[in-house]
Amino acid sequence: MSKRRKTKRKSSVPTWYWLVPVLVVGAGLAYWVSSRTSASRIEGVQTVRVSGGHRQGPVNYDQHPPAGGVHAGVWINCGIYDTQVETEKAVHSLEHGAAWITYQPDLATSEVETLRTLVGNRRYVLLSPYMYVPLPKPIVAVAWGVRLEVDSASDPRLAQFLQQYANGRQAPEPGAACTGGEGNPL
Image 1 (cartoon, helix red, strand yellow):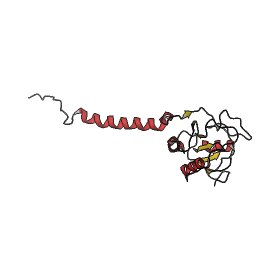
Image 2 (cartoon, one colour; image 1 turned 90 degrees about the horizontal axis):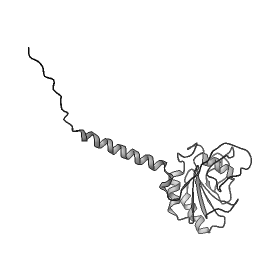
Image 3 (cartoon, one colour; image 1 turned 180 degrees about the horizontal axis):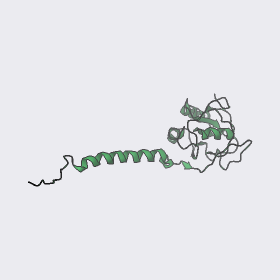
Image 4 (cartoon, one colour; image 1 turned 135 degrees about the vertical axis):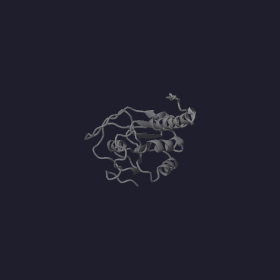
């Protein structure tokens, strides 16, 4: 009787062939996660800690415009307004994923037109003057938990802000209605 030899069968595919695709997929996934979660990707974006909840009546917010917080039970319809919208209703829209660009009421007409062009027909975006208190900069953009203050409507960070945060995952209820509430945008 002859003894059978046990031999290790060598793979015909080198180990590094498997390692390369795993590294490529891992690097791509890491990049995607970091690009979706980091407010620091847009220079000047501030992260603001906020909580939510519905409440009747006026709310005293710490920042103007607020980037979230307690708000009205009804939202303001997304779109372009040429008058101030009710802050508590706009914050409800932020909860639904809206981004809100506010501007000082004395902003030059050409700057306002640039903002209107930027907003266009985008869904989940509000644009309005802010008259309750003076803004820290001529234009302030907010979405739930984030804010950006800029000096000019042509600042490219505004478009980046809308791209990243309008109907963004940072909102408690992204994709909820931004129409069917109150208000008549232009």
